[in-house]
Image (cartoon, rainbow, N blue to C red; front, side, top):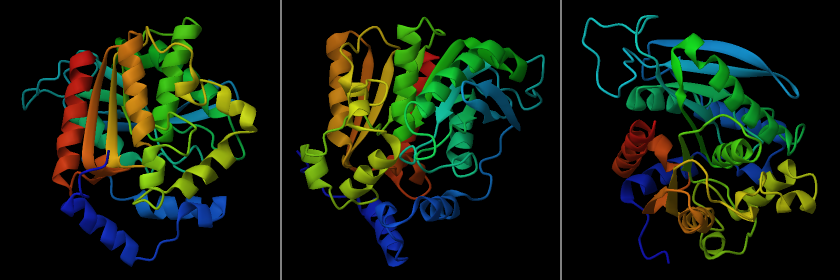
Length: 327
């Protein structure tokens, strides 16, 4: 299936990373991998937003930190505000997007995902709620899923207090965070949870078959390897039994119909490509509206490279347009 060549701009980024000699995730201890992830992905707070608030809610396993981003001059309409209009208590409520970071359920912090959350808030004119869910292996499945579902319920209840609109509520995430966003949508359907207007899944971990064409073609990366995914699953799943649970592995669900309209982003040079494409296909076949956005020359995580890769800019703009349309 992978007929395209790796995008030259992305290839240059990959070459730069490889020149640094960074170890692969699976070659590190959990503690060392977390330190490296935070060092590589934490940076200056850009772009600017109207406000950033660190909050927390009482979840099923204890307090869950969240970071709430309100876009500059949010109007709640998707249209730019007048220059003298500020996002204050009198502004209309904005669409609300609950966001789950990637990192194989093992890595990631509110700081390491700060930039992408600011980008999403700015591009979608949405209040973005970034969730600092507990990580494996200390807190394996189902803890992150429990906290993801609880975060959506909390956001629906209190969105108005930080300028969000609970009637225009969406979930989003990258990689493992995409799996958690999908699980939260499944949970809401199965347990009469909040009304979710859209799910936006960027290269989600959706399956558990490490012998698909995309796993074989991209076993050595770039940016994510099959060995990395094996390691992440070892941290996250308590036993092989968990892999049969649709809240851990969305493609194991008997029915993927009747879920919020979805956007699924996939990349040609990604071990997770075929799982994401299969997820989008099942959504369509089983009655969930879906837009499948496939980028053959991209690799895992590419949407974080909008400042370096033109196709990444195009893809994130398309996702933002989907968010504005559906929420």
